[in-house]
Amino acid sequence: MAKKSMIEREKKREALVKKYAAKRAALKEIISDESKPMEDRFRASLKLAKLPRNSSATRLHNRCQLTGRPHAYYRKLKMSRIALRDLGSSGQIPGMVKSSW
Image (cartoon, rainbow, N blue to C red; front, top):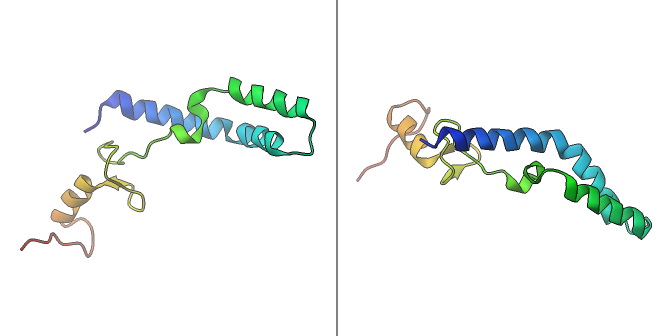
């Protein structure tokens, strides 16, 4: 089980990303538009730099929904391999059986 503080920090980052997503997209649009004057593009890049760092989507890290584990994460199932194996072994995932030989 991951530390509660790490899980909460990740939730805080998700909220910030969601809050600033539209603003970041608009600023990036201005910055990448070659037809705009250089001054406007520079001002937009300064505004983008003033936004919180944790509002960037690249700062997010996938975590298991059950345990909060950050490694060995299956995106489709939103859980780690260990949680998946435990649920499969206990018969809670339909069609999944533990293999042994």
